Amino acid sequence: MKDKHRGLALFTTLVFIFLLGPLVIIIGTSFGDSSVLKFPPEGFSLKWYKNIFEVDMFMETFKVTMGVALLGNLIALLLGVPAAYALSRGHFRGKELLNSIFISPILIPGVVMGFTMLKFLVVQLNLPIYTSLLIGHIVLMLPFIIRVISSSLSNFDYSVEEASMSLGASRLKTFFTVVLPNIRSGLIAGVLLAFLESFNNVDISVFMTGPGVSTLPIQMLTYVENYFDPTIAAISVLLMVLTGLLMVMIERLMGLSYFTNK
Amino acid sequence: MKKVHLWLLLLPGLLFLTIFMIIPIFMTIGSTFYYEGEFTVDGYVKLLSDPYMLKILGTTLQVSFVTTLVCILLGFPTAYYISKTKARTKGILLMLALFPLLTSAIVRSFSWMVILGKNGLVNQFLLGIGLIDDPLKILYTPTAMMIGMIHLFLPLMIISLVGVMENIDGDLLQASESLGASRWKGFMSIIVPLCVPGLIVGSILVFVGSLTAYTTPQLLGGKQRVIATFLYQNAMTLNDWYMASVIATVMIVITFIIIGLMNRLARKLNPKG
Image 1 (cartoon, one colour):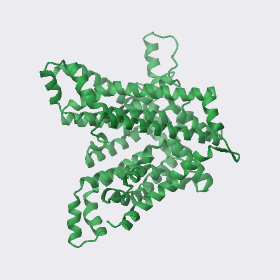
Image 2 (image 1 turned 30 degrees about the vertical axis):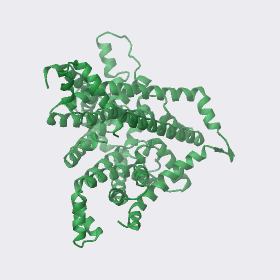
Image 3 (image 1 turned 180 degrees about the vertical axis):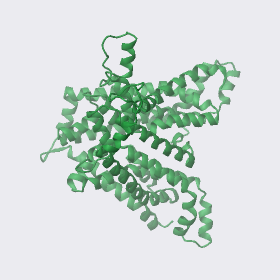
Image 4 (image 1 turned 135 degrees about the horizontal axis):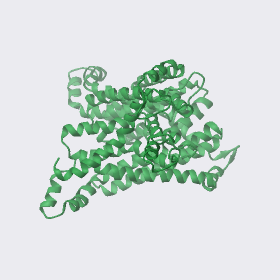
């Protein structure tokens, strides 16, 4: 970068301070000694981290969140991988429309999905809240799985598949022995991305709480509205560590081009 | 591939979305036109005439406009700088922008509660240097919501813009300079128009995102409501499911109108598609 860009460099630095500063402040306050949130923190203590594991609700909701994210991910894969394959390999009328339907959960406002699902699944169909929560998260994850896998499939040369089939392998066998190993990294990246989306979701989960069923983000929301101590800061730090790890893995698996080329 | 096989692959996902997403949404939209068995549009009349509800719509639009505008103003130069750096630096900067984007909205809003609160950093600082005598009320105002939303959506704008800026041929600017145009003029008449598609995509994402955001206004807005928190309040606190359905319908309609308009605009400005 040349000298004439110095102003721009300064501007960019300030923007990044604005973006990352608040997260650094959270890290600082999570280690503070006093029960009020202060920055710079006074003293040093890990008691807020200890507190996370002592509040039952955090552990309970963490289990629900993980369960929904993992089981939901699996079902979203079972529904999404075949659909993505058909959408990228098949030629048929109405493909564009189907594509938009599969991507539409990203466009529909989250609270609208949460509310309409509460109305229809919980009240009208009388489904258990946990099941409804799971269904909501599967809908949420589907477009991420389909998008990432479609883009991996379009980067994978179709002639390799044709070669395998012309040598006598069935399409199904070709898919499992030729296609799947080649789109593996995209598949894993899609799973991780969908996992993060589900794990952090508020808009749908907030409508799906009941006895014994609530997710960690909703529990955090309730906690922040009632107590204002550094426990939330400590959880936030753990969540940031998780996010950071998953982000690095996603970057390793498929680079950042997925995010910049929408 | 055989037609039958194709549909066998598509059907499970399609049925799932139809039953669990499309039908619930259409039933909700339908239910807003019936009240106690009779056809009505009262809900919409109420929404558009009640001063309290109009104020909520107004706050939502205002916050979304300001958020989008500030994201463009902060995001454009930042994205331009990122797109001009070397591959290695670019990778690091993009990761740094992506990190907050992937971090939970609760964590990010919570950090602004610590900064903007009554005993927060901003107030501690201003009291400390003696500029004010009483703490300012920033948290639980529309300003706090805007700051939180800008923080939430700026990475999205930056990343969308870097995507298009990377594809702009750097020689174009040099060519215009060597032909005598000033740097600024070259930038405004060459770079900016080429960024319009990315700018539109980024603006749709930010505008629709802030229009429908729930977590940030819930945590930073206090009693200030926006449509998403108002929908939640009607559904879960007031138990007025009729009004909640009306609000949900309005949110869907607004979202699709904006996406449609911006898509048309993008196509118009970018004939190459």
